[in-house]
Image (cartoon, rainbow, N blue to C red; front, side):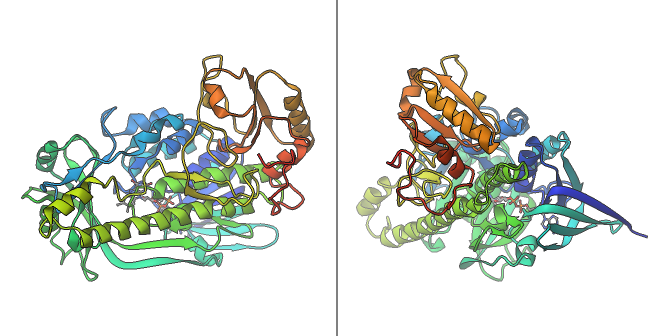
Length: 546
Ligand SMILES: Cc1cc2nc3c(=O)[nH]c(=O)nc-3n(C[C@H](O)[C@H](O)[C@H](O)COP(=O)(O)OP(=O)(O)OC[C@H]3O[C@@H](n4cnc5c(N)ncnc54)[C@H](O)[C@@H]3O)c2cc1C
């Protein structure tokens, strides 16, 4: 007879891939009880999302497992993370090594990293096991979810058939991937662009491929553009330094593991014969999908459950981890009693435009590559092709123009009329709605070592009066606020502001050179407690939106 159990927690999380695990760590560290249900007893052995951005590494820093993550990688420290783009095949005459995320490295406190997704998940599984507020049910699948005015209920079954349980919680977050049961049962619609394009994903070993690629500077990924591919890519990625690879490529709609000659396809993309020992051949359909909203009542979706797109640009996992951090601090704030009524809705307002912008940029990149390959050909006109090829840098969504920000958020004091999105530029200037850049304090510590789980007011330049007003207002609102006071000197001058209010996710909520007339109004908006959190333009407490 199967055993039936009951759990009760503040938050139920369905799906313990990287995003569900990241959310569980965020909540667990904030002291919020949660139960996480994950079907897979162990992480799946397919490498998938390997490129973790510098911003994602900041999350691992605050989750307390950045060094464990770096220790888990398969590539040696210092292995150059970046790509080669080649024309027609990896043996082709035309190629370049585009600048990658290293161009914006100084704007983040951590360096980026690359490791198979299953190792990232193992590090996160270890981390959640250390957090008392988190209960994990690995090898359990959510079968149904429902909500009413008082809370949510999740029914889950153990995959061995031995157990059944019910989880009662205040909130539910679906981190259950692209085919999300939570999204569907909560009635959250999802749609996007279907490219009607089937893709193969192969994982294989080949030392020979590694040796043949020694003609290029050492890199982790190799993208081939070919006129026949209509802007899609043949794509090789390293899993380890010398022999394991993954490869993805467009294939016919009816391709199956039995009908597709993956080896022949790899040799075509490589441009030379190469021995391959296959470990996995699978398929997926290229789509860009986004949930109409990320919240319905007490139910939220995050990561691939909220949005999915082809891995062009390596944004999926990184975007999902930012979802987890954004939603995590807001849920904790509401559950701890200081988050205002508008705070949870701001999760959709901030995160959905970021994904929408990422998806648009990916579609644009595919279209640009297609147009380039139709327009230019070395066979038709070598001189014209070489001129145009030389002018390319990348068809990817790459820095420095990719800068997710929340300028238009209802809980941020951004410029009037601004919107949230991904197009921007990195800067050391402290700007409302943007990621805070790391600078060194006069103590020698980096400011990121001093930011804590709550809000922080950075007060530069001596006058502590404004900081005291913020602290008094925070105390009235019952919200955590620490003050970091320092001189307006050294790297800190680059912030360009004397007073900077930083959120728990290291984004700037407000910045100004002068004390606001009403510090409480600044804070109320930042925690979603402004009387009308939708009214933004022209409502600066200083009279001029800073
Ligand atoms: C070839 C490839 C390369 C990629 N490269 C990159 C990259 O370099 N960088 C990047 O950022 N992204 C990359 N991605 C995307 C990345 O893999 C995904 O965005 C990421 O896995 C999303 O994480 P997630 O936790 O939201 O979803 P998932 O990883 O899909 O996890 C969802 C989890 O939910 C569980 N689940 C589902 N239903 C239930 C249920 N009913 N009950 C319990 N558990 C359930 C599943 O078992 C799964 O573990 C790549 C993807 C592919 C395919």
